[in-house]
Image (cartoon, rainbow, N blue to C red; front, side, top):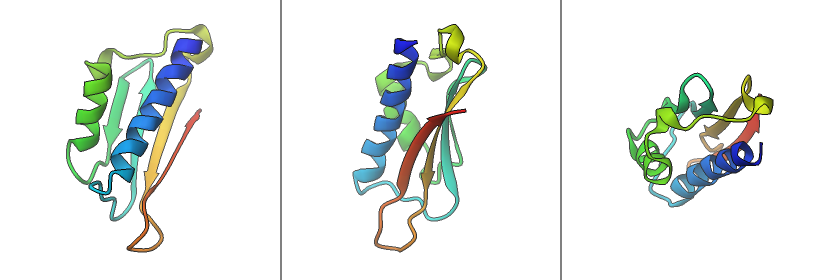
Length: 99
């Protein structure tokens, strides 16, 4: 359980680091990073291409092999949502939770 919680926290922090670097731009919609038993770590709707995926790969290696291991999280998905800012000069928001 602790390992799964740690991995989820690292995924959220990695997303925050990329987003708050000032070089990552979310102009519309939501970028979603998921962590689950079926697919490991996956990034969807990333407008800047592979920047976030590259950073996650540097941290975790093969993203499809990083999966929750405990029974508690075997049927859950950890989702990190990166949402475009309300104003052009703002930073996107980053939030993560288990579902």
